[in-house]
Amino acid sequence: MKTNFLLIICAILLLGTQACKDDDDDVTAAANYVLSVTGGAYPNQTSYLFSTKEFPTGTVGTSNALESASSAFIYQYGNHIYQNNFGAPTTLRKYSFDAKGKPQEIGSFAIPGLNTIGAALFISETEAYATVSAFGVTPKLVKFNPSNMQVTKELDLSGLNKAGATEVYYLGLVQRGKNIFMGVNYQDAGFNNLEDKVFVAVIDRSTDTFVKLISDDRSSQMWNGGTVSSFSPNVMIKDAGEDIYLMGYANNGKPSGVLRIKNNETTFDASYFFNLSTTTGGPCIGLFHFGHDQTFTVSYTKAAAYPFDSGDPAGQYHKINLVNKTSSGNISTSIPLLKGNSAFMTKWENDKIYLNVAGTASANSIYSYQISNGSVKKEFDLASGACNAFTLNNQ
Image (tube, rainbow, N blue to C red):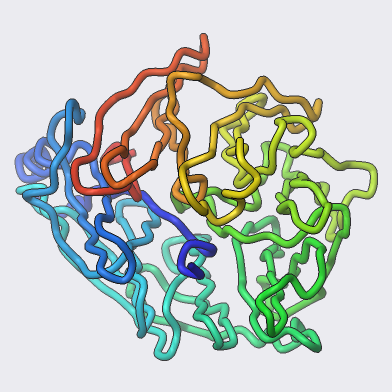
């Protein structure tokens, strides 16, 4: 179960320009769209990374995919895709696509003793950070160079230790100026929240040192992770005004809520709280942000399914307004109930957002949402499992 908390999936790949113009045209023609899919049930899962020349339609198979064992978590930066498969040692692999549209591994690094990367934050072609976790093991935040895939530093975060915390998870990363903001989750020996608060670590990127831990008790602890480079229900987003919005989860009578850290501040804004449970009618997972008045969350119709998708799918995509603290409700009744931990939304067209609808083993699809009029359309189904990533190549 713990594998579902920290991450989730689906991403892409951009093409490296290496040879002459004809070769580049061949690559683009072969890999216009990139997908990642995971099929099977834990622990017997297989992930598939592949591309298509034409926009996918009907039911999409994985006959020409690169296969890998276990669930895959995808990140995109620049012209490359980065994939982490669950299992020790945690390994992040860097891929490009060849002239036939096949993914080619061009670098990797491994972190022994840990199982998964919960978030990967890319600052530049030579600077990036990744949270690395495993059940029963102290997590790590590592700094690495994406160009050569070498780990350059493991940050000392001993200042985050809390008495009574037998499990700690690092969840989500946002960079603003010289600081990195990282969600932190603390569990006790019974795997209950150590405290029902939202915790965020502030890290000085210029020195790679821990600055402080801030908390807010108006909502409860985060669970999911993600960054701007991932395909997941992010717990933190940054708007155009450099304000950071964070999601706390519902627990022990506290609602799902959005908190804010205003631009140039490193404390929670005491004047701002958005009660998502009340506004949407159910507890929520994730923030998906695409600019002014284009923010979404997944609201659960059944509290018993929340937050780890217990039982039948119960999630719905709801459009919300972070400034006015309002909701437009479920974006479409034509979308079936979905598993919230597998949700993602991605955008590369001016007026269209693509969204993942992972339901059951036989019901996994990609839909689109038209920004101008709110219309929703099913685009295609996935034959082999839930989608981890869908994107335009050369986005």
